[in-house]
Length: 260
Image (cartoon, rainbow, N blue to C red; front, top):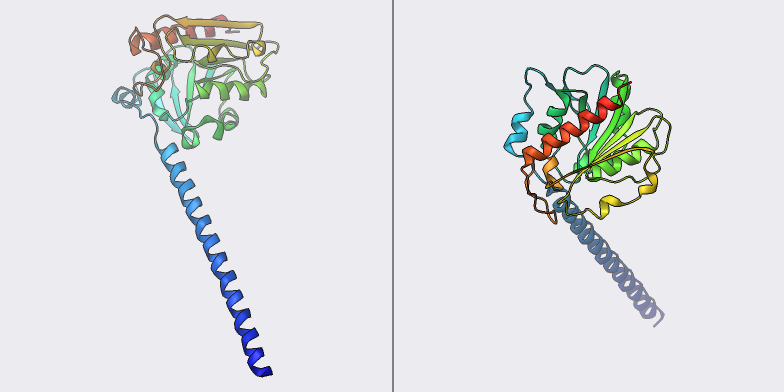
């Protein structure tokens, strides 16, 4: 009788252990499914970005005045300028080279331009990439710049390095930290038809005394780059080429005014 009871107890314990193992396996399977779903969502979100058009691809070729060189952090548009350099952070989920037409024009005049290639096309994943560029090249005057999220991240980075840079050039962006410092300036450029004009007015208290605003009449958010139309953007009433030419002129005027 005792042996039979012992056998029954043993069977109960075994059954209990099997149930525990089954529950654990179900839990691990559920976790694996959740992780797989998250990875899929992550891949779909960051894998879906705005691609550079043919004009941008063509602008990645060197010309007589501007040599396009690949660097450890992206690309250098190396023009005739000797003193000035601009480090440019691209907009969110935009292919890096989409900004080549604009930056190549800027580089043909008053400043060489470093176009930074960001992880997953998101500037907040490479916020401090400017450090490596500035440590590897030597210019008298350094400027930060960027478009959209790239402008906001360039502003955030600049706020922590005000003594190292002469200024910040924001294209359809806004400051995220205090930029007040002696000898530091800001140029803000955006289109009157930008779909986010209210957002671009954020945090005016962070802007330094030396601040210039340039509103391009008829321009929108996306036409600073060459990647097609952007969701929730306004309808531009001028061409992409005209908007970029106006931007180049504004940047040139700003750099000349601060050339010391």
